Image 1 (spheres, helix red, strand yellow):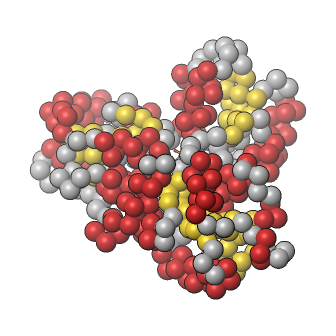
Image 2 (cartoon, rainbow, N blue to C red):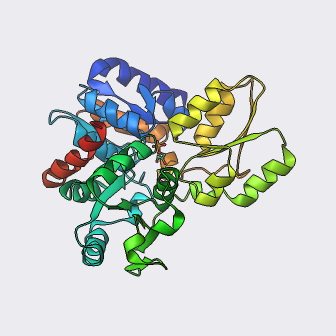
Image 3 (cartoon, rainbow, N blue to C red):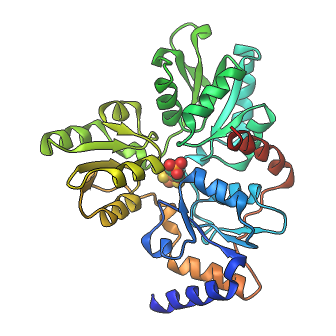
Length: 344
Ligand code: 13P
Ligand code: SF4
């Protein structure tokens, strides 16, 4: 380990401003130690748009590296230290399924739908959304972006995370019976009422990490820790968000814990590495994971010290590996969708 640390330090020193390493808050500590900037999805998208570094070595997952490539200039290149670092949620919506869903939905609702996608989606889905007048959204701007979307069309198709879509729409005053779910496998709209009442169509996708926080976990915390507050990410199911005290994006969770009074007690429903870091950085507060099994994001965790060192070494040797390059035709409209969000 100390050898790998030394290797990374040397390459960082040698490449200086030519190298930029963004790290998502869910990354391991051993990797975060070398990140030039930490952030949530929105912050990292903005940083990728602004950096002038020639090499962007993205410590996060595949869709984030794609976003960095879309927003960066032609003379910049983005690398993902381990190509297996994907996102199961992003994989729940592919382009073929989305185009087929769109055809069905357009028949059902004429031209009254605007598509929007959580940034946790492939570049191809972002491009589809951009082409059809829609936008991307992240957990920290979801309400604002959804409000804008309703100024454009009567109803929305929200990809690929049904939970963020449902939680956001609910907070904007849309009732659960105005929301339908599109099942991309069965190619069916799951809804029991009158079609004309539907305001939001939720893609049947979810985050396999945040779905692990349950009503049972909340009951346990309420029984065992009477004075503990519960805070969760909006990728958790509606029932879990409903029973929690606070919910918000990664950035919101971090700020809430950092600003909480000394001695306060928190059960946090989000990815394990972030919960562990918050425990370490806030020793004056009592912090536990809402689910005692902690809940790691396995794909985020694929980025580790050996992969980071391997990737940096390949750049240093002049034969870079693992470049993430989005096709030119996909780049155009996915950039349209991302910029619509960033300009709001
Ligand atoms: P945010 O960084 O937008 O909170 O998203 C959480 C997440 O699941 C990233 O993969
Ligand atoms: Fe995807 Fe969930 Fe992991 Fe984020 S935490 S990368 S949404 S699986």
